Length: 147
Image 1 (cartoon, rainbow, N blue to C red):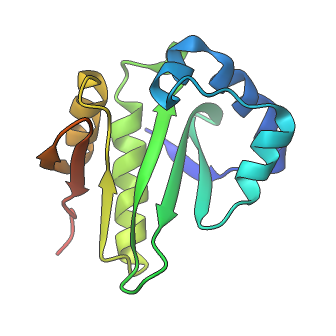
Image 2: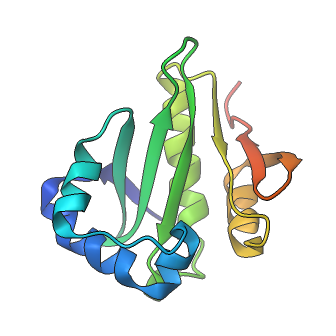
C-alpha cells in the first residue's frame, strides 16, 4: 500500500504545510515549523526522517530516532496527512519501517502516543506494536513479524 522513502530538503515545504495543519500539530504538542526549522530538523542526529507515499504521492511522515548506547534501539513518531487518513496507510508504513529497522540490527522499536489519542493507539496496534505501559503516554513495542 505504501512506500517509505528518506525525506529530503525538497520535502521541506510539504512538511511545513503539514505541520501547520491543526489536525497534525495537535498531535505534535501544537508545534509548527518554519522552512529553516524543518531543514534543521531533517539534518539532525540521531533522527532519520521519512516520507510515506501512496501511489507515488506523499501522504505522511515518519521519523525514526535511536539511542546512542548499544544495542541499537529507538522509536518512531509520525502522522498521515488528514486528507489521507482512514485508509490503513500508517499501519502499513510503520510496520514496514519498524521491520526494516529490526532487520538492520535494531534490538527493538517503540512508539509512545498520547494516552488520549485512541486513533493512534489503534493504528500502532494494527502495525504490530503491543502495549508495554500506560501513563500520560502509552509505551508500545513492535513485535517483529519475522523470527
